[in-house]
Length: 277
Image 1: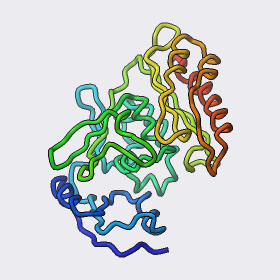
Image 2: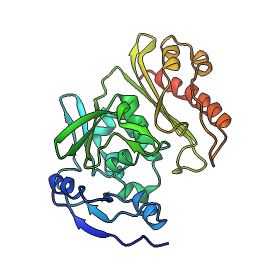
Image 3: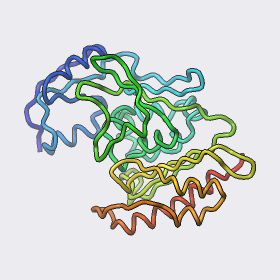
Image 4: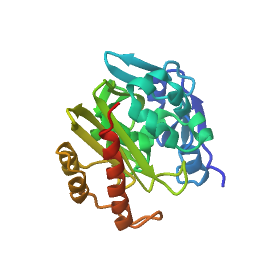
């Protein structure tokens, strides 16, 4: 299929893009890996497409005051090659190769993945697990939104109508940081049937401050707080038993299968968290 007719404008700055978003039914174009497909299937029919690829400074990756900041226009492939992400955001380094395929990662952007908020996507769950935040810009200026508050439901976020994602931020990993990541998909690069991103802090022979963020099993990344507490006690099987997830059936699997897979992933990721260098 072909998209419905739309106007096209190229934003030269963040303020320019924000101003253009005032037009009814406008959409931002960054990597286009999700948007173009929805346009072609006419699931999305904006009156105006705002190309933000010409905005300078939105593709930087930096370490600032023990915080990793990634610009919204950073391509997935660029993030994969980043030494800063490899060293200071190892959870993202583990997750990035699972996003789509090479062609998708060459064009897809960090900000686009976050703003699209697909519940089966890897990066939203990673941000929740890391206790990260999203930096957005709008008519009133910039504001920061905690990742757990940003994802509201199925493809729904806390972005206001004239706001755009400009960066994501997360605490830089230290020598005590432990991360884990695993997902199950029909083919590598497909959206996950179920997935888990996790972060913790080494504490003696165990871990503390455990954060488990499941994806593909709800309408947004989901924390499993009772399971987190069990992992901190060193009780992995107990964590599996208290998983308070209630996945719905979908085209990939039944809810029962998804919940079983969540338990399988929890065992695998718990083992990763317990690894010692």
